[in-house]
Structure formats: C-alpha cells, structure tokens
Image (cartoon, rainbow over all chains, first blue to last red; front, side):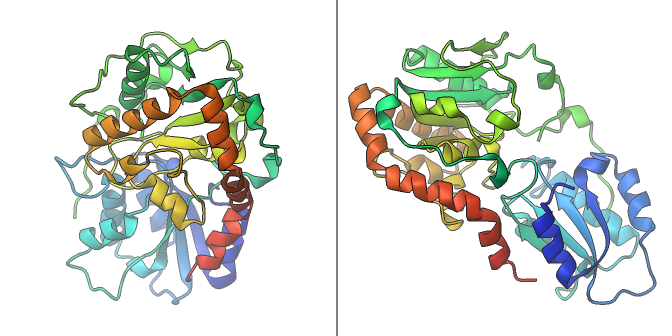
Length: 190
Length: 172
C-alpha cells in the first residue's frame, strides 16, 4: 500500500472498503484492472461501500492528445464499461488537479455520481516522519553556496546541469546526476 | 468511452523544448567530491546530514512540464535537513507547500518563477533565481540562511505534523 496506515485507517473508519488497488499494480495494463474490478462488482452498493484506488505517480499527460491524464481516463472508461457507479470509488492521489480532470472526463455523466478525490503529498514512498531527526541549524557550517541532487536522467535535469555548467556555477554548486547511459533513462517515466 | 492504448515507452512527460536551455543529454554520471556517493536509501532519502555544508538546495523535481504541482521526497529532503530551496519543477509547487502550512523563502530568494505556467519561461526564471543567490559571497549566504532559521525550524515541525494536518482537513 502506498497510502500510509493512518490514511487507510481514517478511510476505513468511515467507509466499508471493498478493495484497495494501486496504479502500480497494473501499470498501463488495464486488463488487469478490469479483471480486479469485475471481482468486486455487485448488484447494489451501500453509500459507504468504497473501492480505494491509489493514483500515485503513474500518469501520462500530453496536451496534444488529451486534456486530462491518460491513465485516469482509461480507469474511468473501465468503470463505465463494468457499469459500476463512480460514487463507489475513492481516488487517493498526489496529482493536485485530478478532481478537475475527472470532472472533464465525466462532463456528460450525472453530477450526483462522482468518485471521491483525495489529494495528498503524504504517502509511504516519499514521507516518513519517523526517520528524521531534529538537526541543528548552524549556518557557519556552510562551505558551498548550493547543491543539487539532480538524480535520474530527465531532459529538464540535463537542462539544469547544462545551465550550471555553461554559467560556470559548478564551483559553487555541488551536484550529483546520472547520465543518459543509466538504465532508468530507457524506462517509461511519470 | 474506449480504452486508449499507447506504447508505454512513449508515455513520459518530459519531452520539453526550451527557448534558452541546452537540453543535451549527459552521457555519464557525475558526483561532486563534496557529496557522499551513497545510494538513495532511508538514511539519505528523507534527510541528509551533509546538507549542513550547503546554503541552498536546488531541487530537480521529477517533472517539469506538468499540469499540476508535484512534490516528492526530493522537496522534503531540504525541509527535513533545514535548508532553503528552490524547485526546478512544476509551477505552483511552492504554493502547494504553503497551502500545507509550510513557509517558503521569498525574503532571500526570488520565487516569482513558481507562478509562471509557461515551462520555458519558468526555466529561465528559476535559473536566474539560482544564479542570483549562489553568486553572492559565502558569508552573505550564511547570513541569509541564519536569517530564515525560524522558517527552517517551522518547516521541520510542519513536516512532522503533515500527515495529521492533512487528515484533519479531510472531508469524507
């Protein structure tokens, strides 16, 4: 689960959770999602019956093709195909705009039947308050103007590196960056 | 509604073209001597002790041309390590942090880049802010960091409370 235990417990205190599914469980293979959702299909749902979908990280936007995310669109299409009411679904997401996207996708669908969208920057992949300690701030320790842990190769990160290099800033800014020969560059990314 | 099929190897969001940027790929890894070459593990993923030697963290977030603000552990790291930061990422990322009770650093850093939605213009703006800050004398940078120490402490405390803050705002 990507959502934290506290988040899940909060949801479970209010809802009868039928299933909890993460996008990463079916990355870009919507047959897997369809199969999973078909197993929780019922004739009727109570208002508190919910399927939690963890919509973290994985999403593809291309303004030339769609004005909403590809994966959320496909998920909505599968739910419609299976004839499950949208109100059964709770999307927990780190995409702060998913609500507007869903409204665009469902613009011709009755407004009374909408999924619940929870936007959060807290999840198990990026947040852990138990693993940090209260460090002192001692500005006299500062030796260099800045650092950038640029990380895995992406175009905007190369542009940042090139900017720092071409402006002779690499003496004052220390960096860490992966080159394009790194295997991660070849994988599909968010 | 029909399922849209695409080649997963074209499903990524960083196919950008900058007006003024050099997007040439770097072929090889670079790690400056002053940065410990440790893997991204729990001890450094959330907080890094070596941040104390640096005045500003330039956060190269996961995405740049993106329709919504997007925050990851890369942004949380300077917060937990108590250093000011700029975000080379989606627009309105600083605004999102402020909506979660964090404070940012417009008293020492030009943060006007955050509201620029055109990604190419935002790149020009954020790099200008970076250059302006890091080309100051190191003693001035130390004074700047010291001057925002109450914000750094506030942000660390907010990080610890963040989950409870969000849960208290939930309307289920």
